[in-house]
Image 1 (tube, rainbow, N blue to C red):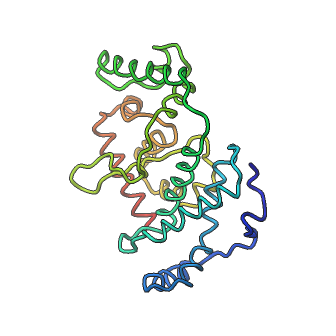
Image 2 (spheres, one colour):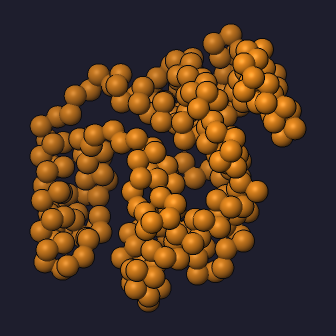
Length: 259
């Protein structure tokens, strides 16, 4: 799939408009009053978000026009469901929606069925994880599972991904009585850590504002893919402390991104 195509679905991507923050706010206030022309203009003004998302699927065999159309559906859903009272940037809200829509399309339209060997690998990994957890009283790393069953970490990851049930990006995964932490808050993609992708969401600047230890925790958790237990062991604090520092860092970053 080539992502350098100038015209996608009849849209000249080289001439897509770029809205200022003031224009976005003005258009959205009109959208809330039922102005369909403003809605159309807002959609066109955010098509660059769709393009940035489908760049992440450059290695797939899907037609770029199809992915662009699916991404546009995600964008429209984001516009229709965006709540301006939550004080969150539209791009921060929309990108996971677009991404989820494209991934759901790819999953639902994948003609390849999960093979018996993939299922066997996944079940072996799950069983090994359970046994190692009981044996050592802690969740094992991917490497430990790999060594236990004699299968590469890459094959284990692929097998587990193949059998898992889709999960909503807005499913809460942690709460302590305050603001819940959702699946979308924990999304990371080590294969697509492009600087422009991170910079577009201001994550680099948000991380720079964190204290050194919190920044290191976020880096290890979401960019290196380590568990809280692994992080705790590496920086010599308890898992509970890692959890608290991680939550504090995420709140600080979210505050910066929405300010």
